[in-house]
Figure 1 (spheres, rainbow, N blue to C red):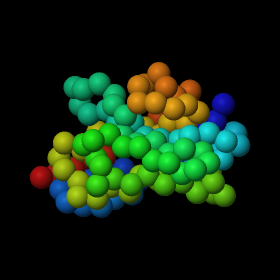
Figure 2: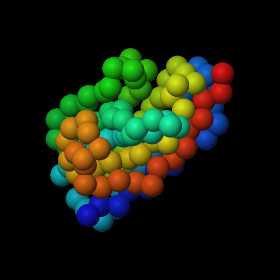
Figure 3: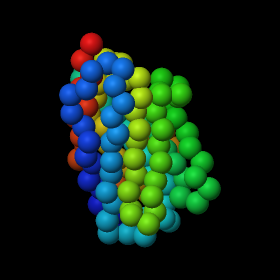
Length: 121
């Protein structure tokens, strides 16, 4: 099972453009989709974005379309989430996921521990 470690979270002002990173190990990274979920305070964990393992197809939840971009570097075993035009409602713990496909929390086998991203207004 692949291990995932997120980084890049922190305190950001509204409108900022931070990038989250996720390092993967323990598997053949290019063989499986990877993605991001998030959990805001007092809310359920929700799907954010996913990218396929071969074609690079990307899917996003509606609330981040046009603002967030998911990408991957198979040579470096890395996945990224570029976040632009951040809003206070983007404040959440962001989780890197791998080894599945879908928008529910049950869709992916591997999860990172998460990185907190806080957007100040």
